[in-house]
Amino acid sequence: MVTVDRTRGYRLFQGLNAVILTGVVIVTLYPVINIIARSLSDENAIRSGSVNLIPRGFTFQTYQYVASDPTFWINYRNTVVYTVVATLIAIILTTCYAYVLSKPKLKGRKALIWVAVFTMFFSGGLIPNYILISSLGLKDSIWAIVLPNAISVFNLLVMKAFFEGLPAELEEAAAIDGMNTYGILLRIVLPLSKAVLAAMVLFYAVAFWNSWFSAFLYMTQSDLFPVTVYLRNLIAGATSATSVGADATNMTVAANIKSVTIVLTLLPIVLIYPFVQRFFVSGVTLGAVKG
Amino acid sequence: MSATGTVDAPSDTQDRRKAPPAGRPRAGPTWRQALRRDWQLYSLAVLPLLFFAIFRYLPMIGNVIAFRKFEPGGSVLGEEWAGLRYVQMFLSDPTFWRVFTNTLVLGGLTLLFCFPMPIVLALLINEVRMRRFKRFVQSVSYLPHFLSMVVVAGLIMEMLSVDGPVNQIVRAVGGDAVAFMQEPGWFRTIYVSSEMWQTVGWGTILYLAALTTIDDQLYEAARMDGAGRWRQTWHVTLPGIRPTAVTLLILNIGAFMAVGFEKVLLLYNPLTYPTADVISTYLYRMGVVSNNFSYAAAIGLLEALIGLVLVLTANLISRRSVGTSLW
Image (cartoon, rainbow over the protein chains, first blue to last red):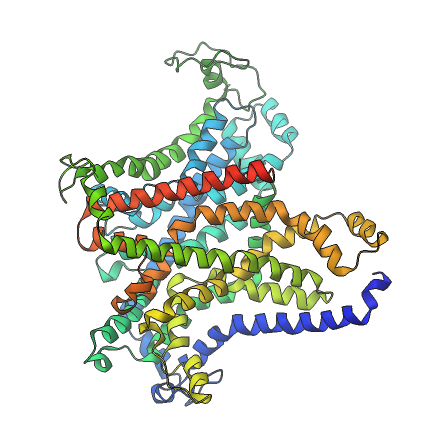
């Protein structure tokens, strides 16, 4: 750049900045590396407080132990099924509505947008939702997780902004060729929207993969739980036990088992994350430009 | 054939469907014409509208049970009017005021620490000249955003457990291990610092995007005027990201009342209730755990209304003073 950049003060700042940001990286990664180290250590080493960033008493047995619990795998499979079904439905509904909202000359468009946006700022709240889901008979079914979260207004606005940016001429030409709205959406618009669709699929999939509260609230049978609820119950078992007091040591789940379950739950996200990160970023910035 | 798009001429045949309510007297097509022309588009909106009606607006109506006596298993909308009984109940409930205060404190601290930090971090990242390092810092700092709240809670508990890294440091400097998760005095620190860990990196994205849109000529002009780095940051960079910052501030204020319900629920326990229990967790226990649905709904309604008022007020102030508005 310009000569100003080469002053001593600026070089000092650059050095300091690198140190600060390296610190940020370390602080961010520390808990994750620590949990991996714990998951590979034996229980006694953990209890003695000697496990930090490197596993002590290296063992793979805890993984084998957790993997031998059939409930863990059933719940893991549930998470996959819920995520796939919920993401599919969410994408279809969001795409349809975003496309409608992106048509500038559509009568009633403003009202349709407000129907969605208002729910960002005011919601019915936990109790009425709970009563609704219960009285619809959705408890203990996948639909209690899928349906109430089918459209995220934030994602909807991102998609709407993207559709609004597409050139109208292509659609007009297809319409003149006699293609109907559904055909235009499927064969003209969606093939042009792969980037935003990828971002949306990832947004929804990560949200559903990570979600636990709906399942925790609406599911009572352990063979229906997603793996996040399985993990929650492990963790909560620990805290409630310690608060009970006396018999705490017998009731707490071994620290290495908790660590392994945490690692196995976050693993898929951490593994795909480096490859898909750019889609997330583009999705967010897209929504902000016009949202 | 059916017509399509909003640019086409109306379709040929006479439409027999019932005329929708007449449009207001202004330019543009009537509802009847619009429906005939764009019915395929409207048809795409049917399922999403059903979703909003059932899962967003019905629960809003369901809030009437805040003013009606509700029996589990009885009518969804309650049995009989109870007036303001439940409102009076929580107004005279000391626990309510405790959780109300906790909500304000946690929300306030979160806003104070988690709103400005992304701006600072974005400015620092923006100054990095080494491409690779910059991208690495960004990738790493976004990561916590993608972890499940349950995983985050698990990480916090392991980090702070008696045998965890934090207590290893405490012991190394000669202190006694602290049972952090059982101490009411530590909860707010734990909550806010973990909140920063989760959100600050991801929060930089919008600022970094805004920073790239600032015109280089502005910097050049500032340099011509003899402005150094700091003054350039103060007079060019910060005004450049102000609209983004204001928008995010309004959104943050709107989320003020709903402070991390899931996280608090995962992290607190009866020992830490004095500082950890917030409105949303209290009404969860009142309603779902203890079956006092009307009472809990009354509290929830108040919480939602305060949230709505906060976001409207913040938006109004910002529109009047800096000209930035959410809509």
